[in-house]
Amino acid sequence: MATSQGIEQVVALLQAQRDRVFRSWVQAVAVNTRGRRTAAETEQELRPMLDALLTGLSAGAVDANNPAFDELRAILAEYSRARARQGFTPAETSVAVFALRDAVLTALHDSNPAAFADFPAFSKLVDNLGLITFEAFVQARETVIANQTEQLLELSTPVVKLWEGIVAVPLVGTLDSARTQVVMETLLQTLVSTGSAHAIIDITGVPAVDTQVAQHLLKTVVAARLMGAECVISGIRPQIAQTIVGLGIEFGDIATKSNLADALRLTLQRAGLEVRKIARTS
Amino acid sequence: MPSAVTQSNPTESPAQQMDIVSDADVVRVRQAVRTLALKAALSIVDQTKIVTAASELARNTLIHGGGGSAQLELVHERERAGVRATFIDSGPGIADIERAMAGGNSTAGGLGLGLSGSRRLVDSFDLKTAAGGTRVTVIKWKR
Amino acid sequence: MSDRVPIIKIGELLLVSIQVDLSDETTVALQEDLSNRIVDTGAHGVIIDISALEIVDSFVGRMLATIASMSRVLDAETVVVGMRPAVAITLAELGLTLGGVRTALNAEKAFDMLRQSARFTPSGDDDAAVAVTGGFDAVGRDAE
Image (cartoon, rainbow over all chains, first blue to last red; front, side):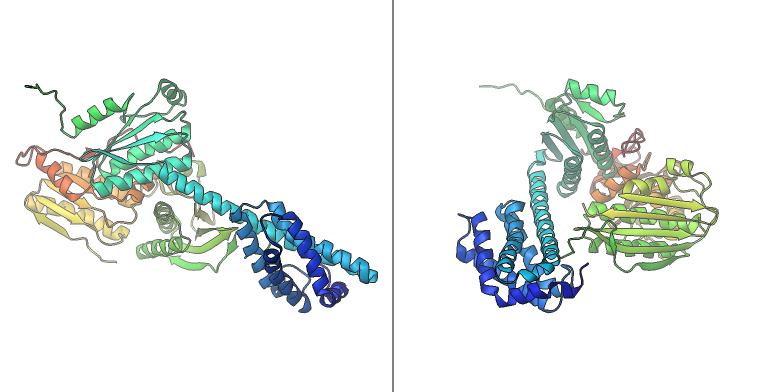
């Protein structure tokens, strides 16, 4: 890490030509976000950054992780998060930080070439600040993606009531481990809240089943039994049956049916109910 | 906000040290693990899994290790939190690890699922055993 | 810990509602108390409510299985009720076989189920609970 004395001339220059550097910085950033940000907005966003940077530099900090830069790091992180949510690219976001280097370089060039010796240390600081921006951006994106995935999971696992005491989960689309787990938890919770002792898991709309998913389905059935409910798995298409046998997965005494109607018939029977055709009189 | 420098090791909060010398200690360890799991905001299912694993391992420490201790702590890795539990005894060690991990094996009248079962319930499982003692560390991360 | 789990007699039934965090000692004591009460009362059915239990580990699991087989020998049917979903998922993951243990969603269903069984006054209600039988060993072993 560079020692603090290596950057004094850049700090002096920044203090002396603060407005000039700021203007060229704003200009450079504005070029990149043209149409989505007005110059006034950009100024408003960048001013607290420059203020916080100077506060830290005046306190003698050179390392981006120095506590004197706490405020600056917080501002950068917040800025990146906001950008990520608004759909800016990582490049468009981090350029705000990197453009400062160019602004300072130009100022150095014009007014104090002797201070170039300080520039590498300052450049390194800007790089690290850029990394902070980038990291915060990625984390914010990950959060957005995780939230969407979760919402999608909730939407895609409806548990429907077929009859008093009988519920069904029609599964549509690709089942991965995470989704199967959500299905499992939702189904078991519904068994308790509705007092249903019978459940049908219909996988007609599932294109493929791998070992993990099959194991999760089996565990669901086992867990339901432990709670006092019985499941039937329906809609097992020929290819899936082949996969299951090929993988050597034992369904044991778990009831499987090729279609939902058969599963419902079996379940009604288990529940002691009967469906009959009645003779119409008129 | 963490620094931009990536950290490879999970950062730690101060560990909570608990003795396991009696039946009641197993219950206390279980409750302490649950409290940590709540702090780490684990889902109900994950809470149940780590508490169950801790219960199995604490009992192992008591019965097979002749007593020992547990170290419980909240861990963080990047944005996610987790619970880490370490069980240490200075007992005879596990002679046949493979057999102990295979499950269905019991030397003390349990269901023989202590080690193999708890491994299935956690995200990370580390076992070190020798004649002078056994040390098992498990971690459950927030999903 | 010297907590004892209370056993309540209702007609021909014994009702056990576990409301404490079970230590191994309490678990063993319950097993003994229950076998004594079955013999003393001549009960033909036992309902064990575990809805308050936040975890069931292998020790408690074994206790439930033992009680079930023991009560069968003493001519009583045991039904375990109210297992929480998270507990059930954990047990399934653990690969814990509660072989021969009958289960029901709640005490009411267990009651209906026991009344239906031959030893009680027949009453022809629907919605019986299920028995947990074999075929579990394939679950969750090798896929991880």
